[in-house]
Length: 563
Image (cartoon, rainbow, N blue to C red; front, side):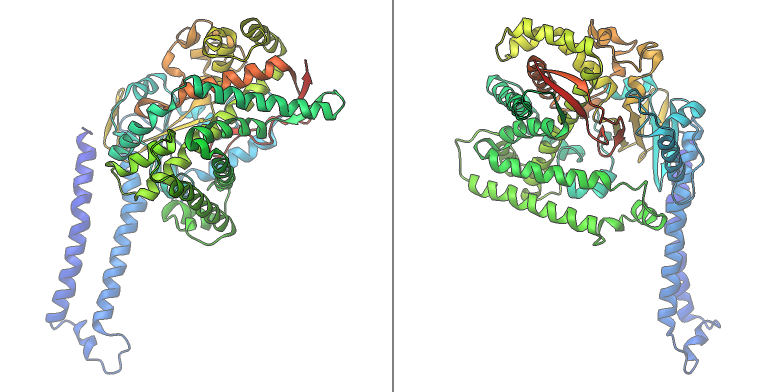
C-alpha cells in the first residue's frame, strides 16, 4: 500500500475529472432551457455559428484543458511527490521534455572529452547517469517526456528485484509503442498471462544437448575457415579483420537452425532482414531528434506512424519479415516430423495462447524476438570478448593453453567445455564489463514494494548494469580493469553481493537462453584461440554506444595471426 498522501491524491483526482465533465454537461443543458444571455445568441439573426456547435467547442476545449492538466502536470507532480516523500531526489525536469536536454548535453560533452584509450568507466552509453549518481546517489528519479524513471544501482534494491518473482514487475509499455515494428508482442515485450504462456513454450527449447552443441561447433569452425582463407589470400601474412560481422554470422547460423530446422537457409534470410531492421531501429532514438519531433514522439507517439524515410524502410523490412516467416509456416503446416522451435511456436499459437495477438502475430513476433535475442546479443558479447582478449595477451595465452590442454586437437564437447575454468572466468568478466543488455528496464504494473520504498504504479525502473558491475565498493578497486581472476571462486566470490551481477536480467524475466548464450561464447572463443593469435588493430576506435544493446560504435578491428 502507498502512503495515505498518495491515496488521497489519487482519490481527489479521480473525482475531479468526472466532476468537471458533469458540470460541463449541466452547463450545456441549463444553457439550452434558461433565458440567459448566452441563449439569446441563438436568436441573433445572421450569427455564423450555431448554439450547439458553440457548446460543443466549449466542451471539447474544456476536455482538452482537463486532459492536458492531468497528463502534463497533475500526474507527473503527484508521482514526483510520492517519490520525494520517500527521500528520492533527482534532476529537475523540463516541462515537456523532462531531462532529455541534460542527457543530450552530457553526451555532447562526453564526446568532446573522449580519448583513444580502450578503457572506459562504464558510463559511455549514458554519461548523464554518472553525473546524477555523484549528486543524488545510486537511487534517483528522472523523466523522459511524460515517462517517469527510477534509476537504481543500489545493491539492496537490485537484490530485491532479482528475487522478485511476481509479474507486477513487467516490461515497459514504451517497448511496444516505440519498437513495436521490431519487437512486436513477443516474449521480449509482453506482460502477464501472455508472457507466461510464451515463456512456458519457449524456455524448454533453449537447452543445449549434443545435437545443439554440434550446430554451435560447426558454426564456430566456419568462422575459423573463413579467416584462414583471408590469411591465405594474403600469402600467410596477418589479416586486419573487422570481426563483428563474423560473430553475427556465427550466432545467426545457430539460431536459424534451431528455430527453422531444415528451413534454416530461408531462416538465415529472415535473420538478415531482422538484423537490418535492428540497426534501423537502434539508430532511431528520441534523444538526438529536433524539439517538435521529441514532443510528438514522447507524448503521442505520432512519429511512429509518419511516413518518414526511416519509418518507410522499417515498415518495408517488417512486411518482408512477416511474409517470409509466414511462407515458411505455410509450407510447414501439417508436418508432424519436424522438431524445431518454429513447430513449438505453431503449437503455442493454436493451443490457448492468451493475449490480444492474432495467431499470425504470435508466430511472427516470437520468431523475431528469438532471432534477435539469440543472434544480436550473443554476437555483441562475443565481439567484446575478442576485443578484451586481444587487449590482454597474458589472459589470451592462459585461455589458449587451457583449450589446447583440454581439447588436445579435438573439437570441444560438453565435458571439455565444463573443464575450461579459465575460459569460464574470461566469459564472466566479459559479461561483467560489457553486458549486451546494459539497460535492464522494468515497469511497476501495480504499486510495488522494493526494499524500504514503495514504487508507484506506472514508474519505469532502470538499472544501468555497467555501473553496477564496475562499482568498486562491490568489486574492488580494480573494478574497471579486465581481471578474470576475480571469478576463480565464481560470482559469489568475485564481489560482495552475487546479486550485483545481472548480465542476463533480473527477477522472473531472467533471460531463458542464458546457458545457450554462455555455451556459444565458450565455443567460439575456444575455437578461435586454438587457431589464431589476436591483437588490437590500429584501426580500432573504442567507443561503446547504446542503441538497443551496448555495442562498439565503430566495430572491432583485430589483427589476426595464424598459429
